Length: 151
Image (tube, rainbow, N blue to C red):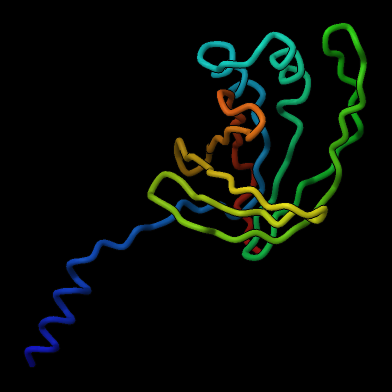
């Protein structure tokens, strides 16, 4: 009986952490992202020029096992007066959840071309999260949920 009380105390005494729900389709929000980046972000002028042209296009779908980067037509972007092609390739790849809190999830995507950096999704509410790109850590890209379909 003493063992039963000890086990119950351990189970009841621990609070379960509920990870935010990432499943479904998410669309990059140019408006939310640029509002933050123009006021508080630390991007240079050429970086801001690029962000204004590419944010709002990326769409991601999270399932139990994979992430789908929905492709988009190649975009002609101009930075410092020079034009470049910006490619939004259609990709699907596995990922793993490394940890979470009530307001964030740390994941490791396993990209098809190799490499796997960690990424932290920071939730504002259940339908909006932001990430800071590794190459632009003082900026944010916000995503808004457009579908809750879980597959």
